[in-house]
Amino acid sequence: MNEQTWDTTFRELFERCAKLHRAGDTRGEKWFTDADKAFLTSIGYTTQEFFDFVDDHCRYGAEGPTLETALLVAAVRRDYFKVVMDGQFSGKTIPPSELPPKPAAVEGIPWLPRLIVKARAKLRGEMDPDTMYGCGGDRAFFVQHKIHPGDFLRVTWAAGDDDRKIIDFVKTGKV
Image (tube, rainbow, N blue to C red):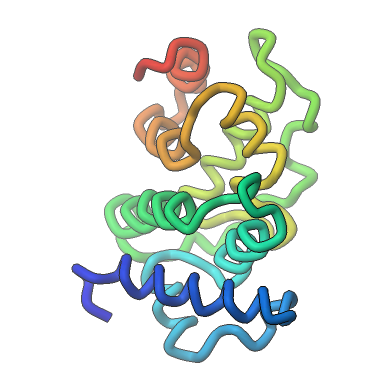
């Protein structure tokens, strides 16, 4: 894979997997070749993360993530993986039990505590296979607050451990 054209590889893989999904192969167990797996690893992704975006894209249509959204989210993860993590996986996984409850709110904003933890886990590649950054609940939050999932990841990255910066961004739309 050429580092300058990784996005083309991502797009082609996404389209190929979406075609398989639409043809009835909705489990994804046979979607990925060894080369596909190596590519995903090189951008800090797992096959499960990739599958989740393709699956929601195909199942939910206009209500699901677009290929472009999946690519933009992957771009932030890839950048974080290469720049902050020096291309190394942490080896950690955040179990669903460590996520704030879905109804939890901060400053009257439901879902935000959960989303902050999920975004940090996404950046670090520590998502549990049963948890998706960009799931239906996340998408509803992003639509309600007019925030792109990729932008939320970038703000989370820039905020570091400072939740206040993320809360202010959600409330004002300004970094």
